[in-house]
Image (cartoon, rainbow, N blue to C red; front, side, top):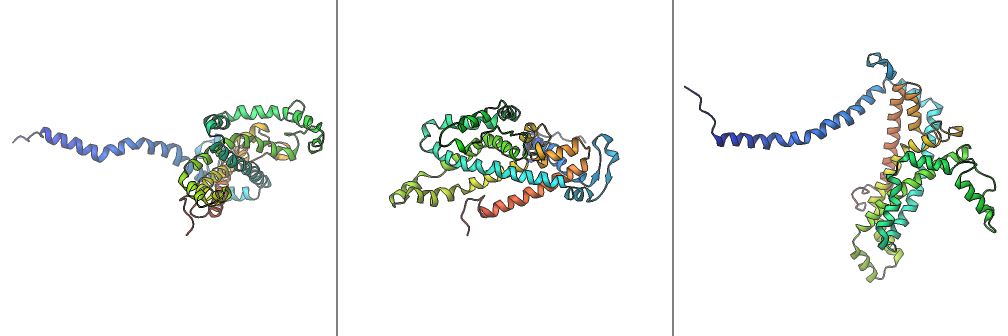
Length: 324
């Protein structure tokens, strides 16, 4: 007896059932495949590598398990602690001014500069989308000891009456003296990321309903009271995000100090960040295991400081609700 062929209706039902059951997984699978290859696998391999002694050019078969020795080597390395200290100082020097400038600037753009909002936003956002190599090279020229514009401007200001004494008479070797390397690097970072933070705060301000200010004005609230009781509480989630991003970016600082100091860390290694030292350990010292362990130690520092930031802004920092 011959088997009956499936009817057209049954075939359509099978195809429909296949679409319903498997098609969503097929369409979404490229994301997960790329995530596993370029996201999850490097993280897991880096964790595995942090317990190995391995030189990148020797092949995978030359890995040797050393336990926590890579971590203890980092924790007993004075240069690692100096790089971590430099990173923390640069994160504060560059991160705090960004927000102190960006918040009032966002208020100005949302208020008196509203008609020029698009132009001002584009101007301040331009450094963020400009190549960091180009930015660092330009600032490298500006910081030049003999021919830099910054020293020329300071010399001109020193010649002014009354306020001239506030500015140095001698030229400053910004990238050649230990005490000026970190301020120079911080200035570049501030210039680049202030516009980005201003945009974040501006979006937060525009999300606050105007009716709240109108109701507060009807009740007799002053501008300061409106700022304290309406703007700041509702802007807190954006502040949490902006500060967290600045904190993470500051602790991962690499391009600006690397280019400004030619990869050396500058005078007295004052510009040597942890990421730079990690890169040097991997590329120059060919010690991939120690570099991998260093990355996890930095990850722990970033995670701890992010938790502290979360506590400072309250547990509702992400949710945008007041603490219960």
